[in-house]
Amino acid sequence: MLSTVIVLLTLLSCTSGENPAIQVILTNKGLQYGKHAGAGWVQEQLGSVTVPDVSGDIGTLIGSIHYTLKGIKITQCDFPEPSVEFFQDTTGFKASVSGLSVALTGSWMTDYGFIHEGGSFNVAIFRVDMLSVVELGRDPDGRLSVSSIHCEAQVEDVNIQIHGGASWIVQKIVDHFQGRIKSDVEARICPHLEDSIVDLERHLQALNVSFDVGEVLSLELPLSSSPLVNASALNLGLKGEFYSIKTHTEPPFEAQPFTMPPQPGYMLSVGLSEFTLNSASYGYFSSGLLQALIDDSMIPPGSPVRLNTTSMGHFIPQLLTMFPDLPMNLQVYAREAPMFSLQPEAGKLSVMGAAKAFAIFPNGTQTPLFTLDSDSLFSGKMWIAGGRVKGSMKMDNFTLSLASSEVGSFSTDSLKNMVGMGMKMVVLPKINKILGNGIDLPRMKYGQLVNSVLKMEEGFIAVSSDAQVSLTD
Ligand SMILES: *[C@@H]1O[C@H](CO)[C@@H](O)[C@H](O)[C@H]1NC(C)=O
Ligand SMILES: *[C@@H]1O[C@H](CO)[C@@H](O)[C@H](O)[C@H]1NC(C)=O
Ligand SMILES: *[C@@H]1O[C@H](CO)[C@@H](O)[C@H](O)[C@H]1NC(C)=O
Ligand SMILES: *[C@@H]1O[C@H](CO)[C@@H](O)[C@H](O)[C@H]1NC(C)=O
Ligand SMILES: *[C@@H]1O[C@H](CO)[C@@H](O)[C@H](O)[C@H]1NC(C)=O
Image (cartoon, rainbow, N blue to C red; front, top):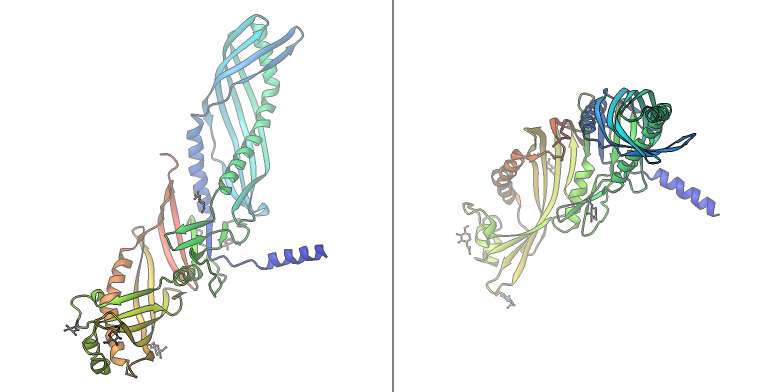
């Protein structure tokens, strides 16, 4: 019985995978660039590497010699460009270095009974070959995980030179090390590499998969499925859903699958689906933030139309007789969350709003007058210029209809023309000024995006970009 339940649960959890709303693709160009930057950084770090002191005992027929090697420094390092490639077989990477050579220098000391000796030494390690295979995965919380699944290290030759000291002791040290330093070094490389991968995994485990974006929304970015790797790219599918911090309610729509077009000419691509935008919109809506109270003080001073019953009487004549010369206010709100729909070359935004009008008596009491439904359809474009995401939008359609009235029915045609005009002449120019100014592309601590392009596609926005990384300060 229990096992049946477990099998059912497992099946359910396998089939209920959600579509990623954000996809991040690292191309081979990006991988090679990252490797090159990483190799340069490693080369630079090698100059300042401190090698721990080594000590031990060498057994001889006449007692043991205790030795210490200290002050070990790397004097030269030929670090050939490593090779790194996507490795589909293990969903990860395969990295190798071949022909690495290192020269070290340091001082040695021995204690043999009461004989203390010392001097300097040089070690040359020739042609080290390393191969590492790393697997990427997804942990139960949706974090990227990385683990070493194969490592090989080979050292072709090691040469040791000891200077100073009595010749028989020196000979003992040389004999001791010559025979085993090659296997010692070989045996140390993989555990060392595996340690740094465990370290990297620890850093990944400490990353948050949910972030607060401002006061209202949080963005959840766990992996929605295991990473996908093929010979030319790594694809990470992320949940990419905004929630209202206050309500955390699930929107009544779901992420649709989308396929990013391959962009091998760029280092990375990010696909942002309309679901992500719509979840943000729904987050605002369900937080109760898509509403506002508008009074006459918010109408631009130059406007010929004021928010009072005299002025509105031009459109709704009965106001003049029923509620003469009273200020008004409007409670405007979204009837539903505004929805984005992305199309090649353009995006559409539909806003279903409503406005409830009130007249305000001198004693402060408000009386409801009527409620209008307004449906607007906007279309817009987005692009990247000068490292900033910019946009523009226009209004494609605007309708106004009387939803209910406390003052009897009236025609909304002239009111619609007036509001439509206000949108086109006042509101949209303001929005377009902000969109035209744009926002900066996200910056990272160690790099920035360059040559970025943005393309609108069916259901998603694709941003492809190169990066410029500077790992040194
Ligand atoms: C991760 O999230 C927790 C809780 O939201 C927060 O306290 C912590 O500072 C975050 N850590 C990082 C590294 O952002
Ligand atoms: C490899 O994966 C990328 C990203 O998911 C995809 O665009 C590309 O078509 C894939 N290539 C092959 C040969 O399957
Ligand atoms: C109402 O608006 C008209 C302009 O249409 C203005 O002349 C008048 O002073 C306003 N009345 C009040 C009470 O604000
Ligand atoms: C305020 O004035 C209106 C109109 O004169 C009246 O109908 C209403 O009862 C008054 N309200 C209060 C609370 O006095
Ligand atoms: C605007 O929307 C209304 C109602 O949906 C429709 O009847 C009308 O044809 C639309 N106008 C344009 C210009 O698309």
